[in-house]
Image: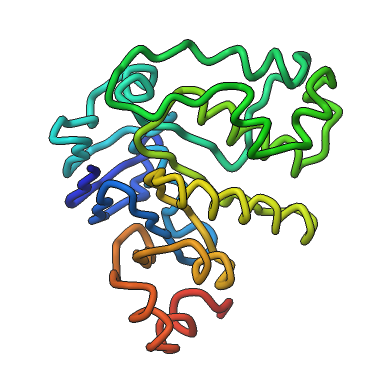
Length: 235
């Protein structure tokens, strides 16, 4: 479904990615892991063309290059994106936020409805008339994921989905990711929490200083504690 090879990318003149390699198969959940600032978010932004320039390598989605596509065209192709900063429309209600995505008519996609995302996140139904700007960070995260699902994505990108959330709310977000996996949603999840990786991922890619330095199965990741020590622990 997704194949990234030799990806290089920059913010202006500052090169931040120097060789990212990544593959995602249909129905697979892949976790990108690594310390803060090593290139996980930049990799996701490169896929959706979010304020970053691809300077080398390629990004193929279902065999078609995304490297020079406009962001809205990437979304229309079937890539959903939930950024770390959530980007909800603060002055709109939950229901109004969920009505923003344009309906997708493609026949080869799982079509999500507002009612279905309310089933996934019951709190959003309870708060459907509440302004998004007064909601907690966890509630805004749920809203951001729900809104992305309404674009009917074939592939969903989740950047640090429970960063900064209270433990109980973070667990609810992880539960939703697990449920989406059961639904067969392909996902790339930027993550540092080992429990989330264990529950959600099929395969793991470790990024360090803008380069893919390790890839393998979840079992292989946990079988080698040196990977965690070298690439996740603060030094």
